[in-house]
Image (cartoon, rainbow, N blue to C red):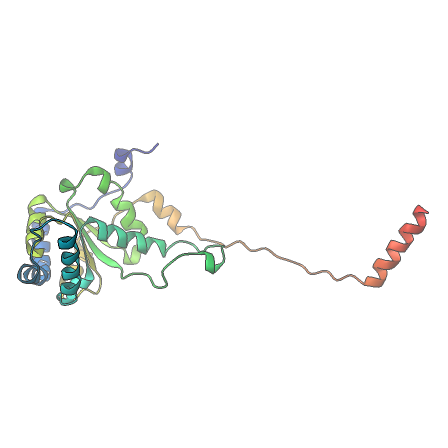
Length: 236
């Protein structure tokens, strides 16, 4: 049985100096601020209880999201949305299935890839973040893999404040997010990739689909009949 600590020791997590963290915040917060400003000005916090209030709140949020700043559609804000994106990306990297296409349930097009995933491990339970490195690694090939960027609780508070949310333990940024070029270029040049040696070996293996060779043999019906007749005469 592999323990969480054992898995953590089997790979190298990227580390971030305080200076680098400040540089990242200086590039990230202006990217997020328009989303927070819009949420603060247009989304009211729910004050009532009951199904009717909850239903109205959901409808209001769906309507407001259509008018969100463009960058909003290129972010995965929070644990659930970020993990779902990583899982969806990983599912599109699986080897071809031998089952008929009608039996394989998979979305036609893969979702947009993430170039950066910010995580504050101190504010999330260990059981939620223990496999995060693995999920990032399996979500994309090494050449386009997202950088997993640890941030301190103080930085997480600033990110949450910029987005006008109570907490943001996990945040993903797509590679084509508007206004993110400077941030993603800096991250790519200064933050190391997650390294999981045993998984890299498995990923580098070539997948060979099963190939069954068949040979069609034709038999002369007359020779079959003669052979059967000769057998009957021998028995008689």
